[in-house]
Length: 462
Ligand code: ADP
Ligand code: MG
Image (cartoon, rainbow, N blue to C red; front, side, top):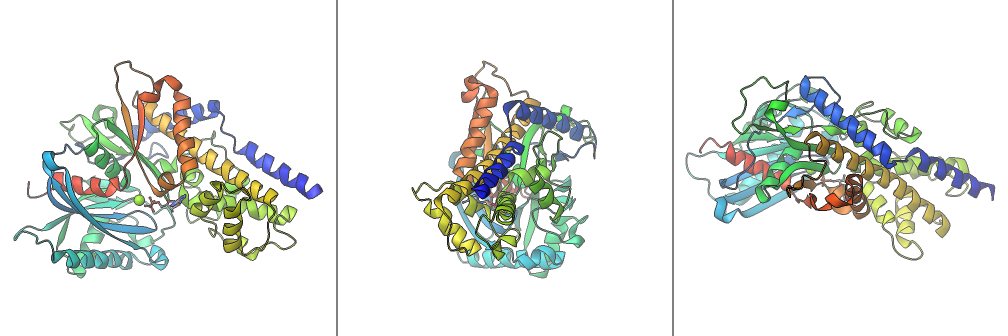
């Protein structure tokens, strides 16, 4: 029928606009490399902030003692207690508690957010006080993983540049987030010192390096997306401080804000961006990360519902609610292997409250999931290629040099199709032969352990 032909035409057009042929990915990788240079050259020189982390030594394995970590990244946060046993024993023990951030606090006041976090930390400490006694005269020390763009002033201070990922609290912007947390800890009577402020990418880099000395890059694919890597200090013109002894500095790229005319943007992406809390910002993140993939799918489905009555005569009211279709649901549909695509039906039924959808249309939904996830994964791969190029690791050296990429984030962890596509694309762009020189490794909660390790190496009591 005419409707079906129009459905096919719309899907085909979307697919073409989302296209990421290898040649385009190479252009994007090159653009990433160029922006990395520009961001390192001068403050504000690029959309890539290329933030200096003040981490010039990654963990060695010698770290010892009990340290805490607080991970504030997106929709929820975690509190960890990590016992480090030094070279012989490594991470001896870890415990954690997790809590979600009440959505209202994501746009309330700075004090309200940090009070809430301090309260949860207080509960955690009170709970473990029964089992573990902090030595007298020694304050507890904490690594604070804060996964938003921060202009770092030292290893344990830094001002918030802007919120991302759905947070929007005006009075935190421009403030030192360590001071904000420290004040809240005081208000709540928690005796704890923030020894290190780290981005989650830097934490993952540190956690990854602790378990494997070949780790030089970390990539997060969760609610948002970002990457960090180890740069030669000499290659950072904007760094005017003393050259670190190690000759190296970990850089938090803030690659979520990368933008290039080569990015395959569609009308759905532009509309989602316009309606977002941060229009014009984080365009790369909006194409590749977990907060947005499901929302892009919703927007395409809404168009199909409106233009070709995809879900019947009425447009399902729920389909008009932004962000109602989440990426975990999208990935469950995408990976539906049942013969009658039962999962697609169940998910759409429960989210959109529709009663019927033909198997033929369920296939279209999967096709859309595939287009959106493939574009995201391939673009993320291009970003990784850009970092490999910048560090001169994009060709086989023949000396057996390995580049280990520490990966983390819920999207990477759970969306298998996405992960496979990302990894295969990196290998493909490299040419098959290098498969053995680039290795992806998932470091679950690497950022939390990494923050505790960095707190240890910046402890007052060394
Ligand atoms: P954060 O990025 O908020 O610190 P995570 O790394 O745990 O936290 O990532 C959570 C994100 O991962 C979710 O917002 C979601 O987008 C994505 N995600 C979680 N589970 C899945 C899943 N099963 N399939 C696809 N994406 C998922
Ligand atoms: Mg996180």
